[in-house]
Length: 500
Image (cartoon, rainbow, N blue to C red; front, side, top):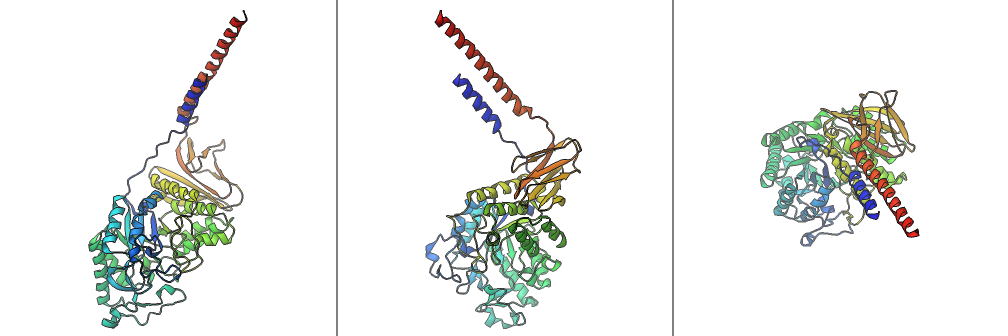
C-alpha cells in the first residue's frame, strides 16, 4: 500500500510541474536589448597592479575598478538578463578623473582601468556570451590639461560656461567648439580609432543636447555609414528634462529625463497612480527611449523610496515591471540589482557591494527579463492604457498575433478593473503569479490583483478544464482508491481466516 501511495505522489508531482512551452522570436531589433550601465572605476577591482592612485577613503579619487573586474562578472550579469553593458569613458584622464570626463588623451586607455588588450578581452568574452559592449563617448568636453588647450587653442569654446553646481564632475573640463570643421574631423577620427582598434558594438554619446546640431548629425551619419548596425544612444544633461528632435539626430535611442523623474516619484510613493507615467510618456512624444529609474548623477531610486518608508523589494518589483514591459530599452545603472543607496554625486558612484543584496530581487530581474525576451509584444508592441482604478493601471501591448496585458497596482488596497474589449472564448493567463482570468456572464474580464503587486497576462484560447493535467490526476486518484479498497478487503479476509 505504501508503494502505491508513493507512485501516485510521484505522478502528481510530474504533471504538476511540467513546464509550459513559450515561443520566442529571434532578436532583430534594438528593443531586444537590456543595458547595464557601468562606471568602470566603481565596479570591481580585479588587477591590483593598476591601483597606484587608488584611495577608497577619498570619494573623488580612484577606487580601483578595472576592465578585468568587469570581465569576471559577465556570467553574473548575463544570468540577470542583461544583454549589453555600457562602460563609462575609458580614455586616459587627468588625475582623479575616475568618471572619465577629464580626457587627456583620446587614443589611450586609462592606465587605472587596464590596457587596450584588457578592453578587447572584455569585448571578446562578452561576445562569446552573446552580449554587446558599448563605450561612452564624450564629444563636448576635454580636460583643461589636454594638449589641445595649448596646441589648438582655437578649438576651445570660451563662451561655453560649465555650471559646476549642476555638473561638479566637469569642474576640470573645457568645452570644444564643434562648429569648427577641424574639431568635427578630429572627433570622427577619435571615434574611428576606437571602432577600428576594438570590436565595440556602439557608443553612448554624452549629453547629446549640448552638442552642436550640425556636428551631431554629421557625426552620427558618419558612424552609421561606416556600420549601419552600430548602436548609437545618447544621454542628456541634467538641465534637459525631455527629448527633442535636436537630441535625436541620427541616434537610435535617447534617455528621457522627465519620464525617469516621474517614474521614480510614482514608485517611491504608495498610492501614486501609475497612469501618471503613461501621461508623461504621451506628453514627451511617445518616444521609445532608454527607460531608466536610476543613474549615476541623481539621487538613487532606493534612497528615494526608502525616505518614504517603502519596502525595498516591493518598490523595485513594481518599477522593474514597468521598465521591462513598456516601449523602449531598459537601461539599468550598476548596483540597482543589489540595490544601492546614494543621495547625490559622488555618493551615487561608489564601489559595488557584491556581498550584499536581496536574493528575491535578483531573482525578479531574471524572471522579468525572461518574460520580455519570450513575448515580442513586450518589446515591440503597440502600447496603451486600457483601465485605471486609482493607483492601479492595466496596459495593453499588441504585436502581430500576440497580445499581452500588464497590470500594476501601486495602491495600498487591492484593486479590480473590468476589460470589455477582449474577444470571447479567450482567457488571460498570468505568467508572474499564475493568475487566470476568464470572461464572466456579462462579457467582462475582471482583473484583480493585491495591493502593491503586478501581473503580466498573455491572451490565449480558453481551454476550459485542463484535461491534459486533470485526467492523469483522476487516474491516479482512482487507482489509489481502488488499491485502498482492495487492500482493506484483503486484510479483512486474512482477519476472518485467523479467527476460525
